[in-house]
Length: 553
Image (cartoon, rainbow, N blue to C red):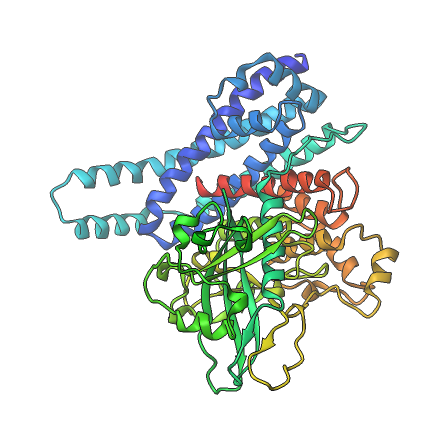
């Protein structure tokens, strides 16, 4: 049979396999609450589903179908693109003479999924029947749990999962062997304008705080700004942050939880006398009582006295500045953080991302991917700002997490910390204050790191650090724990670790490898919009797709 004919048979099997994954995942998701063993099987099978979807995504991306078409095909197995001659011919071109092997492996996976569906069908029917019974919910649950304990054979299910695992690995090997492009296929990715807009606001916010912040409390030794990684970008840019202080008191004061709205503005000095503090596109929300924080003798005292337990939208004050490159006026309006978004007193344990990964047993694969996705986006927001050094690591990222809390519930508190210059309202001399990131905990640091970077071929240290962070998230341990005696440095360790499989799959490993090598086919200068676009498309987009796959599994 010709290759094209084989592919005609492979594509329907591929479609049916995608549908079967959804069905099996849905059934296990329903039943997992009735048995701890079923829950473990569900989690293991989700990993294999993620690997399968990643392999199909990689296969389709090897064609010329385009990112939007590939996404639609994966989201909906009945999408018309699956049946077009263009799609089938491109898949045939990628698989070449190995299309029949690829088809047989697909058929094998579909068979394993069919067996799982059949085994789970009896439980599904029992669940449906009990829902129709007149017994109490408690009696129904107890009866179903007892039935599952008697009839659920964990070893039998694990055999199916192991068979799928082997087939997944063979699929990847066959496709990799079949597709050996003679030249790099460059897929253009355009960086959304929200990213440079957010980065401009973040840099300007630091410049506004640096030198403007003042404090009259002699017990406050220094202040630091903890900026959350996520930024909301619309007509203006919303940034969540907390101002924390190092204090001589036995118990330091609670951080001041704020959010900042940064927008282009007309300087207050150029406004009509009756305009008050209403500059900017959101002037109605700011109010006429807004004050210029540069005129306050003690910004720390002013904002602390304005502490409000409600979800008030009253502006506490503003600072004006401008973008250094464009000289465009920028205004930063400060507001109290909504009570619902502030970490509660029980959540006030600040832990590094490294510590959370190492010590939180219940962190899921989906949470690992969400963490990786958020950090990748943050790199495009924070590089070349005082919050992110060229050499950074997961130890420089923290979150607020309570004992026993699910890590996924605290990911939106991930933040990076920086110190800034400040003035003293009193006559005493200000303490020496470090400016820039509060710490630099990168495992790559050494006295001659810049020489090593050149010697060992690290094209872009920021992206290399991102690659290391992705590996540490996948393996849930810091890089130095994997270092061997013959590793000359951590650059070697990272590259070796990137060649090893992880629970997050080959697609994830490929993304980490791209970051380590800055292997985007478009230079190594992150200041350039072209490279930023490729990082956004290949890294942020790739991780985002994996998060979507896990969220619907």
